[in-house]
Length: 276
Length: 276
DNA sequence: CAGATTAATACCTCAGCGGTATCAATGGGC
DNA sequence: GCCCATTGATACCGCTGAGGTATTAATCTG
Image 1 (tube, rainbow over the protein chains, first blue to last red):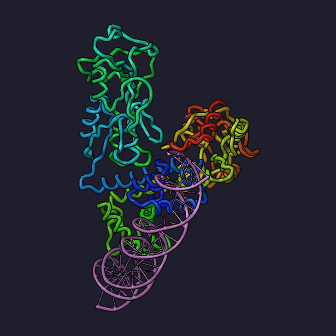
Image 2 (cartoon, rainbow over the protein chains, first blue to last red):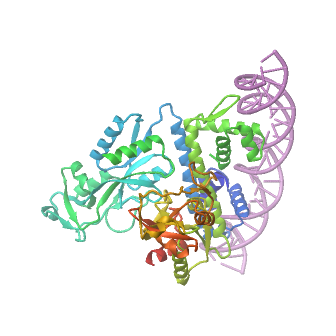
């Protein structure tokens, strides 16, 4: 199977419409139809159930959609990482969830840069829930993220620090008088609805949130709240307040990397991180 | 990048010889040379350092070799899993290290088959160190393996049972009189040299071993020893003996699966395994 | 220095990929 | 119930580009 075929199939499977998929791929509909049916013939499997009015995925088609996405990400990753490695002075890209502990990051970078053989580290501040994708598709080589919030599925990782959680509330909120809240206490604010990596938002009450700046703005305006690791207190704005939460699962900051890409630079950075 | 280009590059990078690589790919040498240099031009990166006598990988070439192998495995996995899913009665393939606990396996299979909606499970007994590869390239959907012996790098897994280790020795060996040995005690036999997945063997003393049957044969002959989980005692031959080891790391049998492929059947099997 | 080895270049052929025109099937509106 | 819009499939054509053969250029060896 060629990546071209996979790209075609993913487009059709996502659009469930040959015309729109062809448009998205910048080609005409007939060759796309032909390519898909050729793919089906070669695999010996029906991927799409089509009537002349509608297209639906078969069971096998759903499997291929999942697998093809993963495979295409791996190919993209190969391309990106090779391009980076070919640069005159290749560095590594460290993805960090915007809003993660900046002291930890600063300490890590300082410690690594003091290492012999350190290469330039480009820090990529990434949006909510985007870090895993960056690692998988090769835009980043290594990342700091938070368990259990971020999924480390398919990644290698080492624990760095474990912290308790704090509840971040508007200044002057009734709960800010308390010295702690229990994790199961009801809060009279709706939870934020964080943007997913595909740009959609979960359903429910509460404001839609695209990034951390917006989140804190909304907290300050009294529209929502947020749970964060304890270290976030150091970088809070004046108009929001943190209250420790007891009974909530602890948050572990981990350093993660894609399983097979253990370049020396990544290995060094990981080792440095684990020592400090 | 197309998978064809990746296959070409991997062949050249492994052979470090355009002629042999072309032979392996079933094509002539000139179009292969051209394809590789076109790939380099498109990536804007030199992948191979060639003189008219020899070919060597550049730094970037080494990166692409690693990444391309992973990407090609993902594409192969997509193809295999889709083919399987398109079968009239698609089942799942469970890879088990030959020599792993057969009681656990039997119990798991029995429990799963009693589940509503269970699909046929094909058990694939696989060689030493081969299980991870089977999962990654789509020949298996889920596997039983042993931490920390098998690496679960890039896989999702759940712990099943944890056991202590036993030392497996020829019947009549002096240590078999003892009721335990310490993990750091010297043994007057050489360790077995297990075949690696690429067919090579580690250096050192001790016999080369291809599979478990051969291993136990060699133990019975007094040529080597073996460390195994406690449950292995149930399936020992008459002519070998197990002695508990104390102080050694425990062996955990885990059920593992590739991170993104959570089909319902795999999820059911995993849930069943964790409950029992 | 001659010959062997090996990658690159020149040139040719044709498979197959994509485009346009059209058909066939289906569902909705009146 | 009939017509038309919608949508995927088919037919056919043109051209890009992948692969083959012949040859050259460069380098190592005896």
